[in-house]
Image 1 (cartoon, helix red, strand yellow):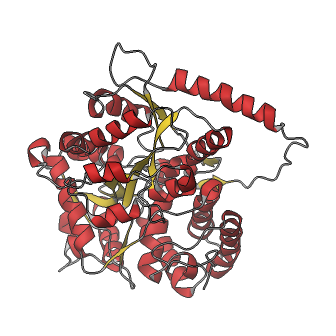
Image 2 (cartoon, rainbow, N blue to C red; image 1 turned 135 degrees about the vertical axis):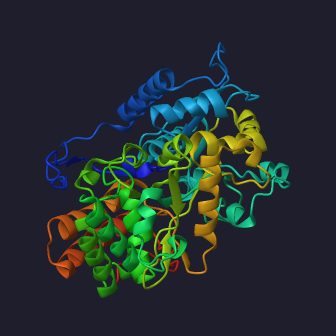
Image 3 (spheres, rainbow, N blue to C red; image 1 turned 180 degrees about the horizontal axis):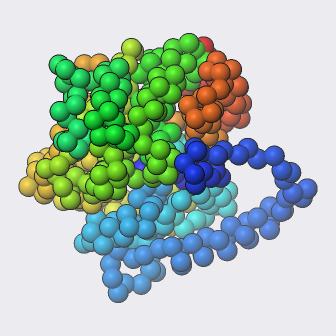
Length: 469
């Protein structure tokens, strides 16, 4: 995951209360410098930073090989150091071209760099990877990859993924690479305390609250956990609110939305207070600090691989409007200023072959975009993940959302609206409708600044998405 986790990188400066009292969020109230650097100075700074990042943050996929002529591969995904190393040492092993991987630790890093290189008329990045919503931000800076798509026509990539990879255009501006989602995970010790007659694969949020209460009553401590210091905003955006409203932005200030937040406020009595400090739920699951958790599949992988017989994965519960969930599609594109587009195309085909696609599960917790029998390459924990993802995607009441599209530099502010709403309403117990009206205003301001149209589960709008009630 992440995020994959991206949201960790999107989060604005904030602090976790060391006493467990919640997440402290701060709005910027200072003044910007009176003078901005000139265009020439800014270009020079970018050039210096570019060289520094490639020199210090890159690694060749082939050991002992120089970086001259390498494909500079910049990605908003797999950015944590351990995930980078797995990508370099395992997934990129055997690559027919030399690769320098550069982690974009924030979406804005990738967007700013692609835009700067486009403005300069030349660049160093030959391959860019991001979720479709983020890559769409620089769609006009990418080259048509219809020739690569033609070579992958027998790979079994679903048409729906090809369509998403067009980034809102009629051209194949990117190629599907890997996909992921978020799931619930429970220690099997928790299963006997499910509500009578409940099916773990078709729970309602009401049943989930009953289960959480029963676990606390039996074990004496809150046994549910959420990664508040991690990808928690995605839970709020793709799971909680849509399940109660059927929409997101267009119903942000509605009474149905208030019901969702009040539900979470009630549920929080049964949530481990350490959740405000959890970034990855696999660790507290393995240690036994919590018995039930929600997180990105990549951040549950270690637990499933270490103790596959101890845990069960299942879809998020259903709300009044459906079973909200958030699929994630990561695609790769080639900037028009790429110095090495031919090798970049070769690298794309390598990433989408069956062997490398199998490694997206075993090494990164993502799932293949290609068809093919991968089971021989999977351990029991990975098979469990794959099965749970399929259940979540195929439930009749599934209500999929997509990651935000077109937010650009406003991505961090967008995540902050949700975490601020959570902090104010759930942790600080402020008046629900007042909070939603206030934060809805903040949401509208950033959507207008970004010029972003609505995205699923809201109907696509012809202009700027409008916050509604």
